[in-house]
Amino acid sequence: MLQVLQCMLHCADLNSPTKPFEIYKQWTFGVMEEFFKQGDKEKELGIEISAMCDRDSVVVDKAQIGFIDFVIHPLWDTWCDLVHPAGENILETLDANRDFILNESPFKEFEMKAKEKGSALTANAQK
Image 1 (tube, helix red, strand yellow):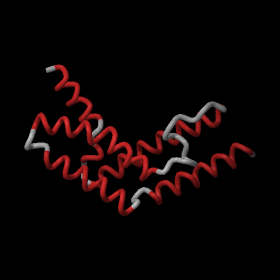
Image 2 (cartoon, rainbow, N blue to C red; image 1 turned 45 degrees about the vertical axis):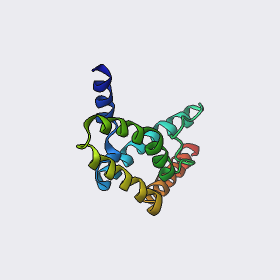
Image 3 (tube, rainbow, N blue to C red; image 1 turned 135 degrees about the vertical axis):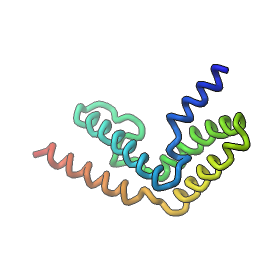
């Protein structure tokens, strides 16, 4: 029973890729901006930049595909096995979002703006 509750808690925490794409996109923007701010601070302090936190090198579309493939899909597959068939629409939305990212690169503009912002931060720090 405890494992079921733990799985449910993880699903509650990691659910944005299972939402309609516009909702998922907004969550991704927020999370990635938080990561990038952490990376900016790490860069400012001269320490190693954490994975996924370097706005100059992260490819957001690729990062989201990896996140879905290695974290989200296995988690939600497990959950849907427990609540089948109620979970099937969740997996369908997740798969549709993954396919959309793979085919349309919807985070490219956000990524470019994040890199521009990083360049501006670097320029200001050097003044």
